[in-house]
Amino acid sequence: MEKLITLEEYIIHAQNKFPGATGDLSQLLRDISLAAKIISREVNKAGITNILGLEGSENVHGESVKKLDLFANEQWINALSRSNITCMVISEENEGIVRLSDKSGKYIVYVDPLDGSSNIDINASIGSIFSIYMRKDVSKPLSESVALQPGTEQVAAGYVLYGSSTVMAYTTGLGVQLFTLDPSIGEFILHEKKVRIPKEGNIYSTDEGSYLFWDEALKKYVKYCQELDPSTNRPYKARYIGCMAADLHRTLLQGGIFMYPDSSRYPNGKLRLMYECNPLAFIIEQAGGKATDGKKRIMEIEPTEIHECTPVYIGSEENMKKLESFFEG
Image 1 (cartoon, rainbow, N blue to C red):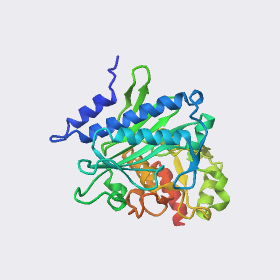
Image 2 (image 1 turned 90 degrees about the horizontal axis):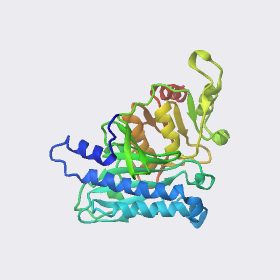
Image 3 (image 1 turned 30 degrees about the vertical axis):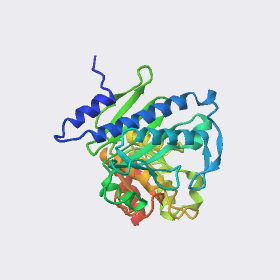
Image 4 (image 1 turned 120 degrees about the vertical axis):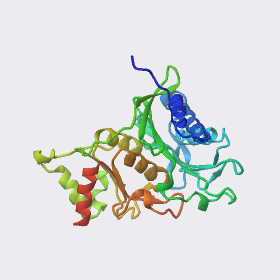
């Protein structure tokens, strides 16, 4: 029988590979796993704890806030404040930065506490997405400008998916690891190391209800995906969950492409660069895939504000190459 490896054990083992490592990042990842466990527990009993439905307010993006959104946001901030390692949190649910530990904190954490919250009340997949940066200069007061770094500066990133099981994927730049939460012992258990995305897949994922608002090049690419051509395994399958973490998890394991483009309705796209697109681009690139905004690599975009949006195209290498050929043509 293969030995079970917990997230805690894996983190410690990985830390020991780096002489001089302080253990702070390892502790931060443990804090994140705590938030994930608490949210997973609440998600699994949401229907009987009166935590479903709208809270009655809107977030910074003008979206209706669900009760579970607020609960998840609170759990992330509480967990990240435990160790005095994180100096500030930038969350989808907060308009500005949340200051935690001005003096000792050396990490900046971006988080989407509950991605896909429109799925909550129908019991469909939801998730959490996180991105971790180093605080470059502790002498500077905490501000949005201190937090604005390109995705190439991420020291770790990942997501937690609350579906038929609770799964955590994360990377520190040394490949992508997948863990599954065993609720009977309250531990994340390693189930796949150094995940690789298939080089090509036959699934495309996008909100086709917005088709009329797209650029012509993207319309042509989607029509290409729908054409019959057995030699290229077309038509492709269309899959769209409405939770980026869930759509990316499927893309990571099965290959293909996920797209949330700009459009006449959303000229800059709708997904957020810093706590949705950058961390998931980091994951996909570490697994051998690609992520762009249609013109350049997602992780090379220089951010100008903490809540800015970007178009995003992300997935298997060959699918991305084909998409790019339509944009270039």
